[in-house]
Length: 344
Image 1 (cartoon, one colour):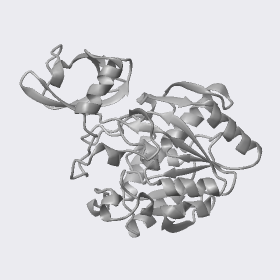
Image 2 (image 1 turned 120 degrees about the vertical axis):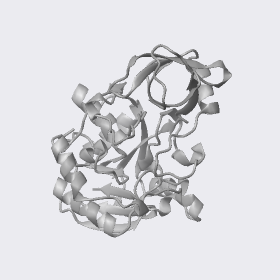
Image 3 (image 1 turned 30 degrees about the vertical axis):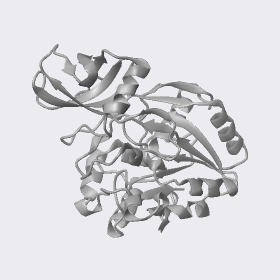
Image 4 (image 1 turned 120 degrees about the horizontal axis):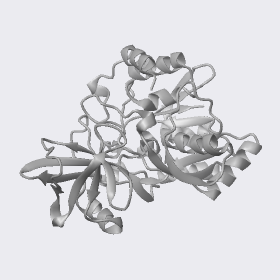
């Protein structure tokens, strides 16, 4: 991460607590696609302000929307090490029984196992992809471990969320492949009726997967993108639809920074778009030349998050900061239940 640039951006604006989105919009008597939408022109920096349900006004027939259909796991597990309660936040699956994880609580007895309910235990097996993550090996594996996670886990909830909302609120309507420990939140505002309207207009919709890891470690600690591996899969149908659109001059619109990371990883590794799966460490910043993605639908990101650095691959830092200042003035809401931004 370009620390100097990020610090400059962090000093440029401050998100007041009142703009933290703490409640799903459905609980306010509205639909998911009723959130605000800031439409940002990447060439001239001009902004329009509307609602997400008007998205189809800004997309053209033949454009391809690429969505991440990774489904959110209830990745927060409560356990004990001896008599000390701990919280385990899963971050990335390494094998059928081993995960990178963040452990919260007064624990650390090296070698002592963490006990969960139903006789499930986990043992520390070394450092994770970066500190403070560690590797945990469970005494369950595969579908048995996944069943345990779904039965006893809770959605990861950060300090700006007041209530323990059920897992369904942390899912996109189209999520189908379990694997993300946090919601791929750029897609949360899509409703089935909006997706149907987009299809009727002739906009292609395809799916890839990138299983999102933890985006925040607590205590003002953030992942380092180059040390933040995530699993991805890009299938044949997505490749065919994207290449057809590129060959006919249509736009590829990524829904979320996870989609950008997956598609640009394939282009970086193979120099062409093809079916691929693996683990990516790709870091995208303002110095990155995008090879396949033309536009981006995303939420609003804190200045400390590397997601915001990725946006600078689409638009200059000056234009981005101006747009974010405008979003603050117009009371856009931040975080996973918040408002949206499209860069075209």
